[in-house]
Image (cartoon, rainbow, N blue to C red):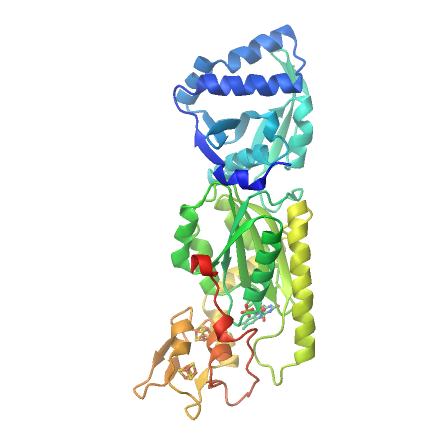
Length: 437
Ligand SMILES: Cc1cc2nc3c(=O)[nH]c(=O)nc-3n(C[C@H](O)[C@H](O)[C@H](O)COP(=O)(O)O)c2cc1C
Ligand code: SF4
Ligand code: SF4
């Protein structure tokens, strides 16, 4: 079994002048291992196509020849003609079935989607049909012979709305970005992080705030992105959207979602998938977990909550193992979700929620500790002239963080008294782990 940690050194780069001979040697080694049966005419055409000067000439003419390397060793090559046609793909036999080919394909797909193309096409020789079908290509024409090489046209749809076969999480490391109002999502992200680490993956948790988008710009080529956030108003909080918008182009990087909710996600993974797809990320899987309600509780049903948390934990572990085995998927794309996504980008739902659950300060309880002000992700809290917190209703995103973590239970709506909910004590509400704090 190949050690997954080797993939930490996986790098992708364009073929440079002078590398043609190395690429040709790799292709010949792969071709020998496959015992390709070509007609004499086919062999001549193949050898000419992969000769170093011809390849370098094509690269000079604008073909993109992308190389995959581990520890500096050339292990794979993918060529695209234009942005939407794969004209060759080879992976060294020592690295077959480890996802190198699919990573090269999805890097090409990400460029294709970014260029506004609807599909990535290719001509597939018989022995490679299984691979292309596994990564989601479908046949789009009849098998025919060109220059003595029989092949069949295949296409990969760029639309996230077209069903794709589930694929495994391949990356050796995961950068996990977490937004949590009252701690439910943080609990789930920690559980997923533990389960991934148990399977030998390296995981780093980060605060999901727009400033941290730049972390993604300097990641290893082989690092997946995990996004964890609560569902809010059938979408998610503007604070989480601000981060998602700040994400740089993904170049086919794997992405998965772990979200918590009270019971109904509204299919928000649909529009989110559309955005991430356009940004060049490879959609792996999305999971929505039901967690304890975090606002408006008259009393906290401790037993029911404990049961929900326990179930969410075990569902998270199952999700991780499904994702690693290629059994998890992104899920459906209800059209109604587009409307709620659009609505969540306006102030309407947040203003409406605030009208229902305004956040006022009980001056008899507040100790002026300033915690609420410092933890508000929207910077919606200031102090009045007497030093009491005041929430700006036009800025508040109703995430309930200040309400949940106020040490004096001083925030809420006196007209609708509710039990204070938080999934953990504030001292445990630290998103980053010690090594990357
Ligand atoms: C403003 C607001 C809106 C919410 N909207 C939804 C929703 O549309 N659907 C749902 O199932 N749960 C909804 N919830 C419940 C939260 O998604 C759920 O409690 C979540 O686990 C909170 O996670 P957190 O503790 O990490 O903030 C909402 C909660 C709040 C405060
Ligand atoms: S966290 Fe609570 S006690 Fe501290 S300043 Fe805010 S309202 Fe007052
Ligand atoms: S004021 Fe409170 S509820 Fe509103 S965004 Fe800030 S922390 Fe969240």
